[in-house]
Image (cartoon, rainbow, N blue to C red; front, side, top):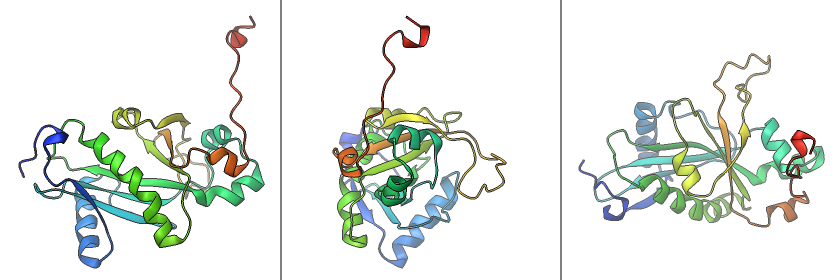
Length: 208
């Protein structure tokens, strides 16, 4: 598969929503072979995409339920228990992102990020009847820099505690990851009824 080295030179770049068994087979095989977390399982409402081009399959995405509780995210959002219960379904987790190991194409990650973030809201609403307002994702910064997140205006809001959804015994067996969020709906705070986070004044940490 000869993929151009610049995203602008990739021919026929497009996202294909996974909506049949054949596309699901392609997505599953690609994730199992090339993504460190494999193909799943995913939880909650889900969408999957394949990244296609005239040069072949380049990778894929999946979206599923957001983390139930996430200390740094919940503090940044500023929601109380009632708001959390009422609006957690409006936060969508980007549970998989893969560019194939054979693909070395400058700016391709940023390009497909932009494509999928424009498409996932309408697609999700068409399938599930409501539109998400935020997307969250996690980056293992021991192995990845998160460059494409920064380049596409995701916000770094803190870190996980290394637990994961199934860690009911607080063993924190997973690696700590940086939490990134992206606002699909610019007015999400007003819609959720939560205020902007209070930032400390300059010099406050030093008692000035």
